[in-house]
Image (tube, rainbow, N blue to C red):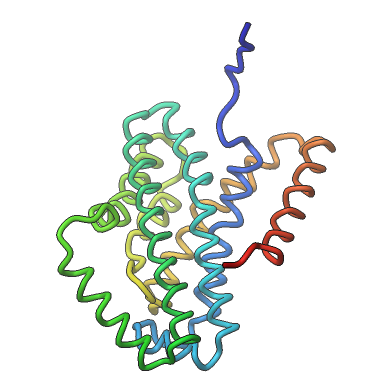
Length: 244
């Protein structure tokens, strides 16, 4: 006999709403950490060669924030879908598929930085130059096909948020401007586009997350215990992951 859970909404209130706060903040933090360096590929690799700790932390912050956006988008899409399900489906799916594309690019960033460590800056520059040429000339690739979703998805989601009343006009417009954020390997902080896009995420999502968290009860002690256990496992995995 199955138990009915008609009020359940994946990934849950605390995951979606904490993600709505932490995701945009991490992206903005990462953007500000690398703002002193020119955004284009050679300058980003040179910045890593000069200050690897800072650049690694900046890119990791942006990548982690991007990963955290998907529960936030699900939470917003759920609210849009209460009155405008088609806008919620199209906007939510396009944005989340676009986030996969961004995550793919962050993987190539990670590889490029380690090429600097292992092969030196000139070789890494040559490899990334070739990669850009090869990516431009490739025939079909799923992440290339989804590049348009990165741009269109935020606009569709913003229209749905405004039409449904999930967000007001100013916050819907802030969500739409996220579409100007550059996509590509080793794209640093563009001024002012990157900062405008990161600020738009903060304006659109953080009040949503804070407001919804205040409306509910705190997690149970049992849930907090499991969160602590999982965090400990993640930390141990970071330091004791098998190599080779």
